[in-house]
Image (cartoon, rainbow, N blue to C red; front, side):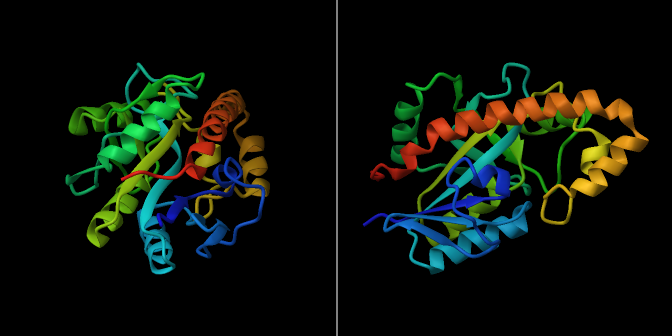
Length: 236
């Protein structure tokens, strides 16, 4: 029996999968064939969550959540189902081909654009337009996130199939406001009192924050539309 383990970094991303509360680093079995683990942001947290899911009996791993676009052809709400992931050290690892084809077939019926281009890994948030341009030139990737490389690398090391499912939040032209970045805790969660204080000092960040909120709303809608696919029997 295939038991899928889904690594998801942030509580807001978890809510596109389930309303049941998740505690960080503690896998939750929502059925015999589907387990979730809230990892916290970053590759180290993602690798630990992936390993914990595998140790709990999951024999296939998914990296789930949002990504930032590097190319101008992608917009908020577009779906990334990459055929491969470029890890931070330059290693390029593939998604499981049969599993990936099944996900693409499912996604083609959804009301969103689907891209199968490369996703690249980052050790930190890539938040500036210039930084995104440098990254796409160096990697040839269409999008970036902090967890997928670690999840796919862990799956590969364990001999398990892996799949990346990511929805675009910030497009290539969007910069994440400094007020938001400074309000994040070490696990990637937003400290609301800190954010409010930051915005009071930098009210010019408010329009960018509103655009980012709308972008995340579009990405979340895409992830919710894709989530039933995880409950379907995976075929390898």
